[in-house]
Image 1: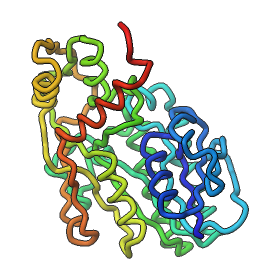
Image 2: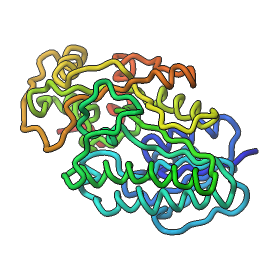
Image 3: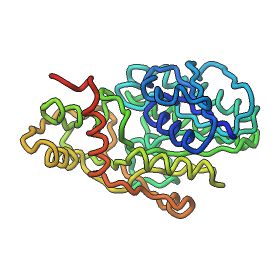
Image 4: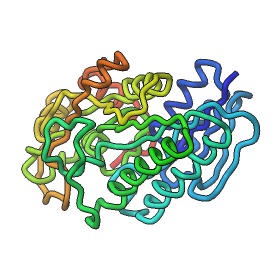
Length: 315
C-alpha cells in the first residue's frame, strides 16, 4: 500500500483528491490548518484506518513518519476573498509551504505535485493561454499575494528538480467548481448559486464581457492524477476550454433556475483578468485528458449539493 500526503486535504479540491486515493487503496494523510478547509469535507473518511488527518500549518517545518510515495501540495487560499483576507499566509504557503513539501519529497524520495494556477498568467495578453506564455502579472497589486506566491512556488519546485533531482509535477489549474466549495468564497459559481437559492439578484462585475472557462472538479481530479502518474514534469494546463462571458453564464443560470432573476452590475475589481481560457493541447496529447462533464450537468450537481446545506436555507 502506497502513501500519499495531501496538503490542503480538507479543502475543496484536496478533499476530492482524498476520496480518489482512498477509493484506490492508498494510505492517505491529509494535512491542513483549516484556514479555508473544513473537517466536514473529510468527515466521511475519518473512521477508515487508512486515512489520517493532521491539523498543521505546512508553512512551518513538519515531518511524516514512515514511507511517503506521493506529495500533492494543495494548501493555499484560492479565492479572492480568502487570499485578500490572508495575504501573508498565502505568500507563506506558496513559499515556505512549498519548500517544506519539497524537502519532505527529497527526504522520502517521493513524487511532488504542485497545484499551481492559471493566475500565473495574470491578465493575459495571449489567448487562449499556453504553458509557454510567461504572463502579464502585477507584482504588487491587490491579487499579487496569490499570483506571485504561485509563480515563486513554480520556481522553487523547478529548482529542487534541477538541483536535488526531485521528481516533480506542475499543474496549472483553471476555474474549477463543484461540491464542497465555500459558499462565500467570492468566486462566480458559488456566488451565483447562493444568490439563486436566496432569490437574490445575480451580481455581475464590470460589463460582464470578461470570460472564464469552468471545469467540474471530477474532471480536474482526473487530470491531476493522470499528470501525477505520467512522465511529464510540466507545467500542464488543466481546465475546460469551453469559454463563457460572465454575463452569458449569469443568463444560463437564470434560464435554468429562475427566469425572473434580476442581473445587477457592479464595478470590476482591480486586476481582474479579462480573459481566461486554457490551451489544453499538451494535456490532450501527453495525458489523453480532456474534460467530459458539460457545464449544464456540473452546475446541476453543484446546485443540488449547495441546496442541501443548512447554511443556505432561509433569507
